[in-house]
Length: 147
Length: 117
Image (tube, rainbow over the protein chains, first blue to last red):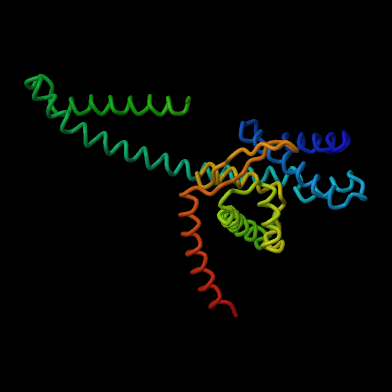
């Protein structure tokens, strides 16, 4: 079991890391992981070196963990990698959605012209349907972003 | 005037990140019952002999990334002696990605070896 002094030092270290990370749920999760890691590493070191002051052992553990800047940089790099992939996927989905909208709208416009007995011409019917498809796409992406 | 990391330093950072992700997948894969973060850090150090120069804290953003990519799963292990720990397990997709990366790395290293003088 770590001493109050150790707990205080760990809290201060984690609060320094906290300042460097964005305010997200994921960052909180990483802090929790770091705390578990430090506790475990310290417990193991204390058991292996019972005669060495705990303060000294804790400093070695924190040195191996890395400074807050290094941890924050790795977090940022991992996040940017993910965002890059995510935006690539998003672009692909948008392109696919446009193709599907056009493919579905063309026969639908023919049906529409036929049903209205020519009251609406084909280009107008197609334009109206494509506008509906576009509006539906905008609403859907807005719903996805806000969920 | 040059700013920040030198060419070789930033090259090493890029290479290290990819290799580190691969090494983490390899370690988790070798533990079919799963392994916790501290265990991964220890094995990384032992098995790579410090070659990847990993600061242990940087491992957790990588583990999060691999989880978000659905390559790793997490199981919570309760303990009476300490706090609850996350145990990382390889997913089916993680196993597929690991095997694909292994083939790629093997090919790359074979070719590079031929190029080295």
